[in-house]
Length: 265
Image (cartoon, rainbow, N blue to C red; front, side, top):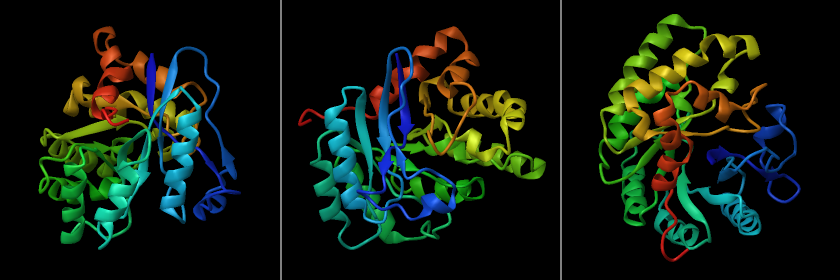
């Protein structure tokens, strides 16, 4: 069984997501039809109304047994974060929270730290989506909340094609991995590559670097579909790069542990 821990679905006729059109993405995205035993965690997509998106994702999840859970969006740095967290945590199948951090200059926010502590008290993990140049700032941020389980999305979005930036990414990723409460999604690489040829040329090294520093016990899979598109099946591609003994952990065991369904759900 493969648990794809990073799938995006949306319907902009119901929930507006302003950035999609500019990124050349379709107005609707559904759960893909894939052969084999495939399950999913649906991840928020930075909708204009995060509460409406969370309700819609929870409704999608409730109707589809393939969906293990939902990672919803909450602005953890805002004054009403406690109220919003309580509302989201009460939704069926919500198993985590993401607050997009990339390009948002939130790393020095004491209010964000307090919101992350509230999230930890709810027993929910935090998905951290940052760019490679923000990894050191993320390390400082999450180091202040050691009780919070953190999942780095997309291996920190390495800057493919920039040799100097890639060296720095490896160093910063290794520093982040020193924090035992942080895990890594092997996801999102196709979106960072110019084309399928470039993806093919770097996938072994990039995934290998992430697995090396985090270890197979702290890595999980995510397709990032449809933001990332792999000509082959991304999840199967990644598993083929791993030793057979590590595949079950990365394929589903780690994600099931991290995004545990709480008893009330």
